[in-house]
Each structure stands twice: as C-alpha cells, then as structure tokens.
Picture 1 (cartoon, rainbow over the protein chains, first blue to last red):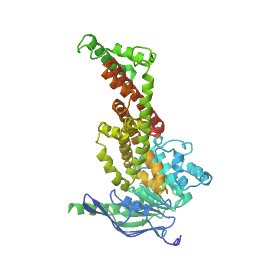
Picture 2 (spheres, chains in turn purple, red):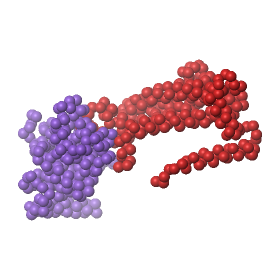
Picture 3 (cartoon, each protein chain N blue to C red):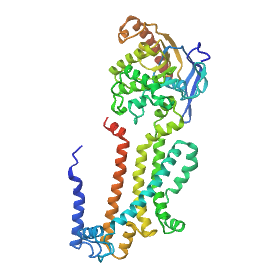
Picture 4 (cartoon, chains in turn yellow, orange):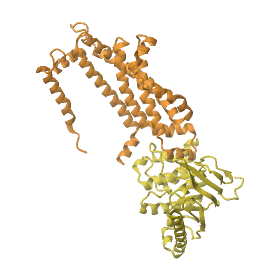
Length: 266
Length: 263
C-alpha cells in the first residue's frame, strides 16, 4: 500500500443522513476516526446511535452523505475481502456445511484447495470447530455459528476486521468464552480491528482504544486509550486499572444519557 | 403432535359409503350416477381388459391413455420450468429485466388457460403442440412468479456476506440467490404441476384426440358415466403422484432446511 504509514482506517468529517418516511434523519455528524495499523479499536454507543451505520460505510455496504472513508489510504467504494465483516447475526449460508461456508471466500477467488487447506485446518483448530466440518449451520449453537463467521473471514487474511456486535445475540456465558477466543485469535493475527458494541466491559477487555459515541445523531464523544497489558484474559475485568477505566466510561455515558434526556424533554 | 395412524382413511371411506347409499337407495335419480362398485368394475376392465375384443371400446386402453397424458404433462411442465426458473431469477434479481418483463406477465397471468383454447387451436391446430402450449403456459405462471418471489426474499445480510467475501454477481446469483430461492421455486413447481394436469385435461377434451381428457369427454358423450368417474379418479391419482415426486425431490435437495425446522 502506498500510504502504509498512515492510519489503517480513517473517517474524515463523515456525515450520514437517512430518509425515513419522507423525513430526513441525521444518523452521523462530523465523525473523525483514525484506527492505526494493528490497533484493536472499539466503538461504544447506545443502540440507534449509528455505530453500525459507521461500520457499514467502512465495509463498503453504505456510502457517507458527506466526507470520506479511507482504508489504507484508499477510498472505500464497495465491499472487498480485504475488509472482512463479522455480523451480529452470523449470516452463514444455511445450505452449506461449516467447511463449505469457510471455504466460500477462497473458492470464490479461484484458489486451489492446496493453497487454502492448511490455513483452513489451522483456523478450525484455533476457533474450536474441529469435528464440526460437515455440520450444517442449523445444527450449531449461536456461539458455534459465530466461530464459523469468524473463521470464514480470517481465512481470507483480511487487512482489517470489522465486527458489528458479533457476540450481541449470545448468552452471557457464551459471550465470555467468545471474547477470550477472539483475544487468542487476535494475538496470532494482529489485524486492524474495528469492533462495534454497547457493552462497556467487552469494549475495555478487547480493545486498545474505546471511542464513546453519543445518542442520535451519533458523534464521537471521546476516545479513551486502554493501556492494559496484553495478552489479556477475563480476570483482567476484576483489576483496579480496569475498574478505573470502566468508571470513566460509565460517567461519560451517564453524562450523555442525561443530555439526551434533557434534549428530548425540552 | 398426535400420532398419525390410519385415521386419514376414515373420511374417504365415509364418502364411499355415502356415495353407495345415495345410488342404491335412489336418493339421486337412477341412471345418472354409477355406484362405486360399478365404477370399480369398469375401471378394472378399462385397465386389464383385452383390447379390441370386449364389447367395451375402452377395454384395455387405460395405460396407453395414461401415458399420452403423462407425457404431455411432463413435456409441458419441463418447458415451463426451463423457461420459468431462469426468467424468474432474472426478474427477481435485475431491476431492468423486472421493469421490462414483469408487467406483461402480470397482465397476461389473469387470462385463464381455458380462454387460450381457441387461440391455441387456431395457431397450432389439433396437434400435440397446442396441448403443450396450454400446459406449458399454465405451469409457467406459478413457476416464474414463485421464483421471482423467492429471489426477492433473499436475506440482505447473506448478500452482504457474499459480497464481502469477494463473490461476483454471477457467483452470488448461483451460490446464494438460487439456493435461497429454492424452497420458493419448489412451491412454484408443485403449483405448476397441478395446473399442468388441469391444462392437459382441457386440451385433450377439445384440442387433441387421445389421452385421459379425450376419454373423459368421449365417455360423457356416449353416456358412460362410470368411465368418466374412473377417469377423474385416475387423473386425481396421477396428480397426487406427481406432486409427491416433486415433494420428494425437494426433501432431498432442501435437507439443510429440514435441519433448521428441528433445530
């Protein structure tokens, strides 16, 4: 890449409007985001704040009304395998087995099995899907489906990984397991990650930086650096340093929800 | 769910008893409706009787007529599927094709295939082609409409996932849209085969001189209501059988969906 030295993901003065039932709705206002190469960045915000819209624009599913979205210095025009997405609903192809779902990308690119098979085998082991290769998505639990969703994009060796509340529909226990799994996988691959969530602990546990968003119209309220040692494990969430950060984020959220309540009240 | 058991035979059995009673006790005017036993006897002779030797001209001609009608249904149905499925895929997938073709289909669709009969005879004459035209046309509509519907119902998230994984539009159409529309396509095929049997009877009654539809009309003219009823039963059974065949094929091809229902 020509501008490999610059930020991996960059949003410059991005605005996004929607037309909903004939009325113009402002979803995002003056968004400035810069995610460095190999950074794990979290976007934290209440539901409806436009954080998924923001991620969709980085993915290339959606275009900004104003401003520009750059990935590795190149303007995003359309979806591309270099920008992998893990959705909240796993969005697996229900007519394909686990293995066929994971090899969908490489096959589509016309790669020969010899070229991707070693990577597939390694990933199956890393995400704990060994022995489930010939299962159909309908036979898997929510957590297992999301493992497939992660494996099928990692096999493409993407430059950036975009995750849209990937563990949002899982139960609390499974979510913890998946967070640790993601940490261990990320320690190996170290992609640039943009991770959207409304879960404060999840954001702080996983990310190097947490950008707190405001309620609609969404703006970036504050970016907080999470300088906690890596590799991280779940126990981190009980440490004093973690709790200090959590307190800071929570007070930001409280301030924001008060402001939103006052605004809608007036 | 309660166990199925042999309960489903109860209603047909009761209807059979009622039919028998209606004839033997003369609740209906005598000579119009044949008794079930008489139908069974005529049907048996129609199937197994020696051709040409018996007094009845129908004796032993059942299989030949069944084959005539079945072949027409199969040919017309295959033509309808071969045209309807690809066209439905394109209408559902492409805005331009949809705007170009869909309004015409929606305008022509309400014209019943029976209304096409004079047109069909005028253009194709009293030959097989006319019958195939009617059958194909009748089966085409439900197939194309349901395929279109299935394509438009494709989950947006799956399309995004495929694009994000680098799939071209052709790949998406073949590997995402088509399998996603397949359940709906099978619904269209099952409706289509039903219409095909309706169309073949209509076509054979008027446009061609062979097959079950021809026998039905011919038997009515010579007052053989027993053969008429036997023909109705034959068509019903063939329709049921062909529907089960398509249903069976869908069960095999849509195995992933059965898992979903139980999951």
